[in-house]
Length: 401
Image (cartoon, rainbow, N blue to C red; front, side, top):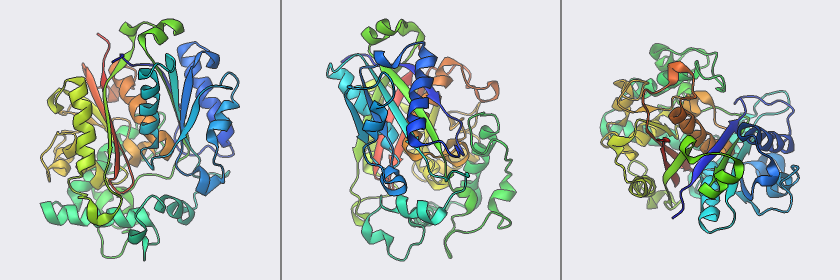
């Protein structure tokens, strides 16, 4: 199997991109990652473009054609990828698959999402409806905002099953808002959050579904953003004028999908998620104890707790405590979401999985702000999900030695 390296990563600030079009986002993503690697788009052999809401929010289906319109990207193998909120992670894996198959030596995974209007305003009901299409139709009945409602139910089940408090889960958001304050790309970089604020129903913080524990601060953001990750084999790095000794290697990867039907999956111990992570660990030849930092899919605080368990950092039911006890903080046993995560960095759906891998690579290269840098980080993991804990993509990254 060929070694796969991250030649370069580029992302926009997450939040509001105002009147920037999807076409402009794609062009900026490619131009940005090419500038990072001092190369040209013409030297990229293939691409995958990830977006989840282009059909529903923009009535645009053929994003591969828009990407081919970027100078230097024409007449290349390009595919559009949709795997709900795991679209970005899946785009990376699709690029890896082509490189392994010998279809070129370089490939770029690009993720975009334009979720706000040209004034930066979010139509929550419209976005909620678009994202709701990624759920089992039988779960949508009676739910105005489908995914917050589904995860409110998961949160309640998690709390009741494992006797976890709202305060423990709120510690996830507090950690992530603190990290986002130091991340210049984060959507919530100007917002402070205390634990008392996160659990108190006041101002913007409210219960989203009557009778269920999910609150505003338990939720990820509605976000515009784009990201691009340039991958290469060793031959590809040589073509780009880069050395493997200077680049992060994707040492392991895995993906798996549980049934969408609610009655056919266990949301508290999702089999596909565990399988994806264990596949990535096995390929990389590592265990959870050898991971120093990870970027995980925290669309809601309960998912961040589950992610700590799925990564093998905590036993089932102890994921919330992993965060509450400070083990997920910089300087903890495994720093999670030093970027701020989806809750505070932002969640531009198609770009999310790519941004996870990109930020994790920056951690291993010592390129994140000093306050967020994990000391002597040698390995990082990422865990990206799509749907109601349904599609899962995981990677393990290795620092250059």
